[in-house]
Length: 322
Image (cartoon, rainbow, N blue to C red; front, side, top):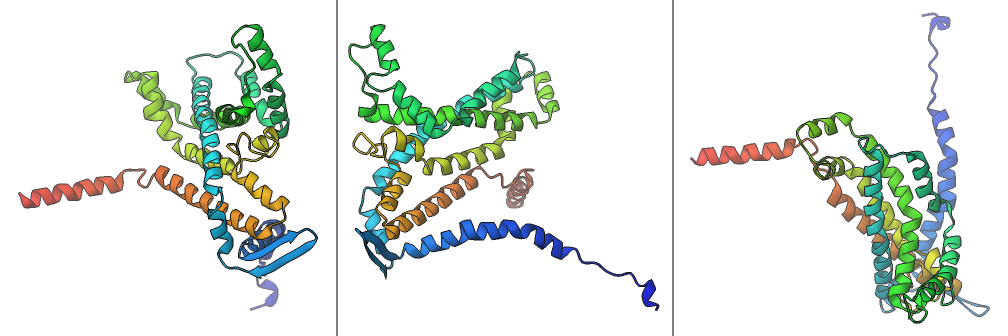
């Protein structure tokens, strides 16, 4: 066969590897290598005592054991309480607004304007939000001044000095910053549902409440799972709002001290061994919780075929016994 007539094969695979190489290089340098180094440090005694460096000395699991003997469970509980106080109203309000804005029968005017307004708090930096709330709810702040002038209270409410007040303020800030983003995502999910399903349900006489719980919620369950997982990870990483609001002390009596604030304390004291152990524990906790949430919300049998087969086998066994 003439070589000139042969079709020369060209491999484009190498170009694909070249194009994705920058991502993997960046990921390795800024994520993978620090992650491996953090895990390595968690097994060493490694800290600064003044200008003197102690370690790194292999101590095995001693850092993890030492962490469990601290107030780590208390800080984990603080983090969970403040997250749940902000997440429940966040998802409830987001679902309500998303259902309203996507319902064509309500004919709400100015939808685009309201979408922009509810998303605006998400664009504000958390540090600015915390400073704003610190000024608003301080003992001599505008909120207390208004309440005193209206005669609602006899003396200024010390929001920052009570456990309920401080936790509620942190939860309120997290709610205001993120409910708009959640609303936009849920609206996109609801608009992706086939409108003919709602039309058929309406013709069958279904009410708004029935369509919401029987059609809307099951159809957007994957996005609800995503929202729950990302919110849970964000809750475990809660830092900037309580850090600025309480000056890093977790006042009152460390009831607003979060896990990342506790981690920051170790980093400030340059105790890299304990900080690495706490980081690894946070990673494990996040992975376990996200896995449990995913398994609880995952649809193992979307078309019902397994359930139908199981019912058929059960019926066959009954008929065989008869």
